[in-house]
Amino acid sequence: MQAPACRTSALAVTMLFASCVSAAAEDYAGREKLRAQSNEFRKEVIRVTDGVYVAVGYSASNVILVQGENASIIVDTSTDQSAARAIRTAFGNLLAVPVRAIIYTHSHPDHTGGARVFAGNDHPEIYSHQRLLDAVPDIGRAGREGGDQFGMALPDSMYINAGVQMEFGRVTPPTRDGYLPPTRTFSGDELSLTVAGVRLQLLYTPGETTDAISVWLPEKRVLMPGDDFFRAFPNIGPIRGARLRTPEDWIASLEKIIALGPEHVVPSHTRPVLGGAAARATLTAYRDGIKSILDRTIQGMKQGERPDELVQHVKLPPHLAENPYLQEFYGGVEWTVRAIYADRAGWFDGNATNLFPLPEKDRAAKLVRLIGGPDQVVARAHDALAAREFTWAAELADCVLANDSANAGAKRIKAQALIELGERQINAIARNYYLSSARYLLRDLSPQ
Image 1 (tube, rainbow, N blue to C red):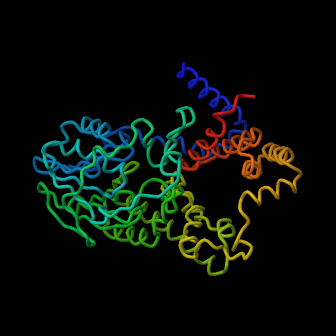
Image 2 (image 1 turned 180 degrees about the horizontal axis):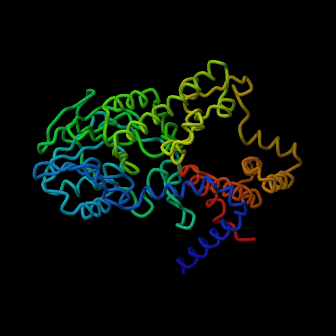
Image 3 (image 1 turned 180 degrees about the vertical axis):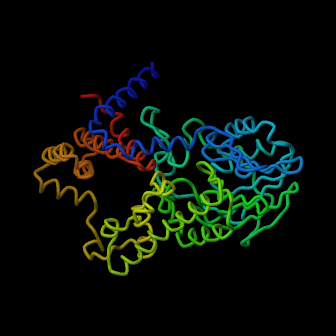
């Protein structure tokens, strides 16, 4: 009895989503670019150079295989044991046993969740930076910590990807069952070692995380930068309840790895960059993109600009905005600007009115009365939808919902506005969050 009802509810919500989207095709240019980004995650074992291979598309993160003398080294281990088994099968005879070493580029679970599968009974050394052991989980809030930004609640018909990965946790819920703790850590800037005849350097390169390391093969000139570089603008200011990823550290880390002069770059998300000229160009553009946003934000702050003013003009310069490795599939320029401001100037934006603002419910009640009551606000929100002012429509709906969370008209209009906003996004995180939020609003409403 219960399952058919659930399917009916899901179908009704899907139909509501479809009915909301009615704009011209050009309005969806960002969405179509995001769909094209999914090509980055097609399943393939790619030969980087002699003795180095990367499995792309089998998991949320890549797994890199370095062949040694009758043994193997694994860099990052995928999200979970199921994905790790699929990757081990895909490597086939390329993966020589035993596995002598596993290297974690950082602590995120999509990089550490398949270690048991690759370790097997080989008892490899597991390397990381010492800071991995001290990694603090993001605080988040219901829905913010991972789930909604990765579209875990969205049906396949509404889902595209997660920006730098095809999916995270939608098919196989993330677990820690496959994680193995490091057996050997280092606390300085570098650890040099030789494993199975392969010379490696583990370089401390904080960026997306404070425990991040890059793996450098000096003889093959192959760089594995973990999540400090991939084919998308970096997520410096996450929306999920995490702290700012310090841009100065990220820039310094990129400068360190650029100076190595890598011939090939194998990130832990998206496909490798092959060839010295391409490697130098993409890493340099990545550094310049982050530095540009940081410098322009600080310059504006020194001139007294507040966050809402900064985001109007702090953009990537045209030659970087067009770079395929700086498209906002994952991180966002505006989010980065706001996060840099908050990190340096705190929560207060300099407007004295905002020192002790009215509670949201009180402000909303006054605005609703000023406009003429809830029905008038809903009507004005409907007009905003018709005028394609989707953010304004959602804000008007919020004024009603702040004091009447069950108002069906406001819920429906806000959901429609969020769908329209989500369908126009190039940013997968924003799209997934918009559409997930809309779905929660709609799931208890019947089609009109």
